[in-house]
Length: 266
Ligand SMILES: [Zn+2]
Image (cartoon, rainbow, N blue to C red; front, side, top):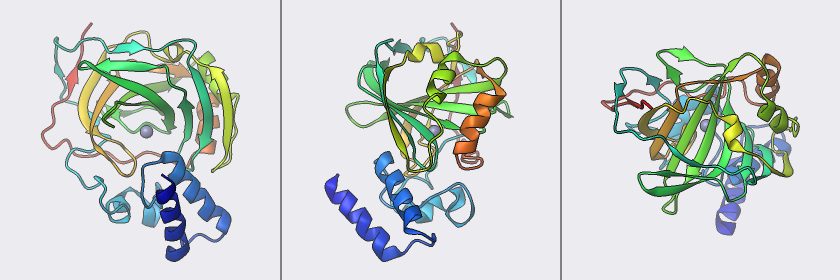
């Protein structure tokens, strides 16, 4: 990791990012380090560094792959073999910190929460937001999409997506947002327990397909579980997140390329 940080600092010094202040360069660097995945990290949601250019900017990434996310969830097949997701979320698991990484607001979790998918354990690492949603369901785009990012011992990802619609305010969101606002590049220690179960819809039926991370390096082979039922948050709760994140921090719809989408039934 230390080597890659040094490499990144060198990269930014040599490449002379087009931004106008060293503060912005530092912010870009922070977001790369915070994400811990990208080697170049100069991507954004618009213009010359927007999603259409991610494949060029992020050389060696999967961003031009065939099985990318997000997608429009349509033409799904009911699959009675799909079991409920085995969620092992505990009320004592702590959020370690919250960061504005310049792309999203992200809550990083201490070890404790996990899920089991196909007999493999995936640990919950972080939760972040997209406004509006990245996935669409039957063409419908929701005001907000929350991603619960899990990773297993082999470095493979399973992401649970929860859509939010506008309505009555959410008590879990009230807690999460009590640590905001945060400027891009800013980070705050949370060190409080958070019960992720409280932040999920009651009905746990889901859509399932295999796709990718929706941000560079767009890594493929990601198990996507998208709850059918949205949770409800207030307009003010959506607006608070929206105002702290880049405008429209969602990636455009990616082609299915023959992938099957399944829907579970309890
Ligand atoms: Zn996401």
